[in-house]
Length: 118
Image (cartoon, rainbow, N blue to C red; front, top):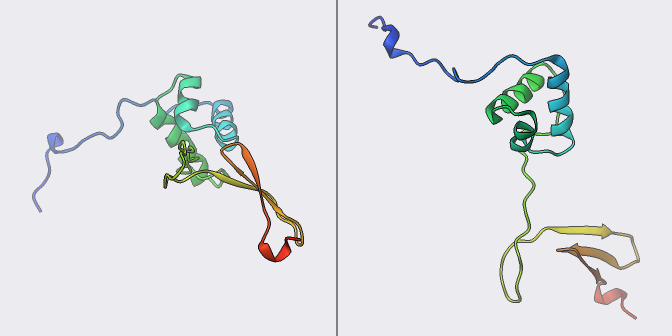
């Protein structure tokens, strides 16, 4: 194998700030675990979003228990009659022998199997 020259290398992420205080690292983790997206955390702390991701990866590597980094909350799409878009559905109540309450787009519906109807 031929020896490589210095110009054959790339310094990765050379524009990022890798220094972070322990308090800021904990604050980033707390915001992330509370559900804030890393882009929002970056704006709040005036840091590059990649620095936030690296901070969270650092926490995971060192054994911290945090919410998944790649987890994204799916935004509900507007649904019109007859459309086939996906929606965010939240089941509010499930009890045996009782109707189930389902919330779709902020509206609640009651599902009751025909076998239980009177």
